[in-house]
Image (cartoon, rainbow over all chains, first blue to last red):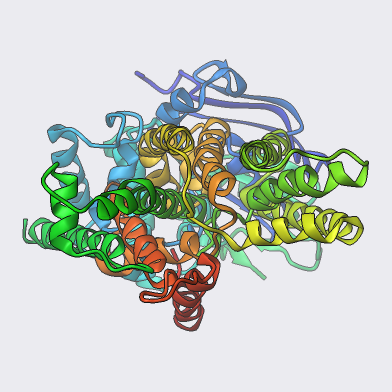
Length: 255
Length: 340
């Protein structure tokens, strides 16, 4: 896991969809410490892409390789050690304490009935501090605010300790303050924990500011690149069907 | 720590209610047995012959059956509700009870329709249990086959409900063409009863249910992982296919066996897990599963005591009593729209 040359994640000519192809010809890759935003219009398949990389959905054609191995060759337990997925809105379980919710991240390491080790217990408490939920461990997770719940979900993915963290619109239901807190938290995780963080978002401006790379699910084709390069290439002009929407590279916004 | 102590108190209360209802169940009935005589008879002391006869050949077997059935149906309902993330899921929602019903219907009414008569009494009793079990098990097998092709649990739930309706239609057809005598036996079976099972049948039921419980306890870890939905569970590393299979097999062992020997008993499977959630306010199945089992046993034996109509010789069908207890709970759930 040293250096950026190891391809932690590689997508080769991937077509999304199960019976019907909904998006095709995706070529992309990711390394450690990278934060990548997936952008695109509604219905382009951002969520499907993330779910396909996490092994939750099957994809149609091509290859998704994780650590140089086809995703299909992993068992569910081994895959969970490499990739974790945070759904955009997981159903909430009433009377599930925040501690127990985060502890589900230890699924692969806990014993047959789900009891976790002392080390994991302190790891969970440390992680809660890291995401800013110190002292919340006994709270009912179903009564957390959206921002707190999202932080708890991120804590769970950290406790799971997989290399790649995929998040489906982690900031979609948050106010501006929480949006910034969560995105900064993700950036910090990518850098200090050397994780690969990939998330979908509609907030292009913030993605341009913070992300190392952006995957654009454009209307005509898929783009991968660093923010500056993509602006130069005019990749963002392809984002919407409506061709009158142009991306202004000087103002860094749509006009 | 404080929380754990309050769990102990709650468990002690459940055990106490279990004990009290069981003693009441042994005492009350068409003849009221003095509690001292019951104690003497059980501990091998001096008790009137009549008391020990009634106790050992009637009341104790019936009480054991009721306790097992209540615990089994409730644990089964808990697992279904978590698997399908549906507060109204119960042991029978997948058509398991319809399958058992179809087995019994074919046995009782199908054969006579083709002119085959079944020698009654003993053979027909075992026949009913066996055909119910085969029916329940075939439905589960069918669901297992289909479940790998369905993409999520909601589709599976819909499939189960549809299957139940189709089987219901076939049973109606059989009823329409059957002789009135066979029809009567079938209708009585559908009312549910704990009326005395032979020791061998109780043993069979006991063993199947114990295996079902063991598997359910093994499912606890996955049930907890499933609390926040399937996508979430998969991302934790849960092997959904094998988990779903294990939960379905445990469900059939539990609900299938109860239905085979006691008939389809409704409402307990839905209601008891919710009562356990209300009492313990903890979603962790390590707490909920044992609580549900003991609460289920306790409520079932209470229902059976009521069904015996103390002081009368008649018996109300157990399904009537379980509905009277279960329906208010279900309405409460709907009105408060509790989610799991």
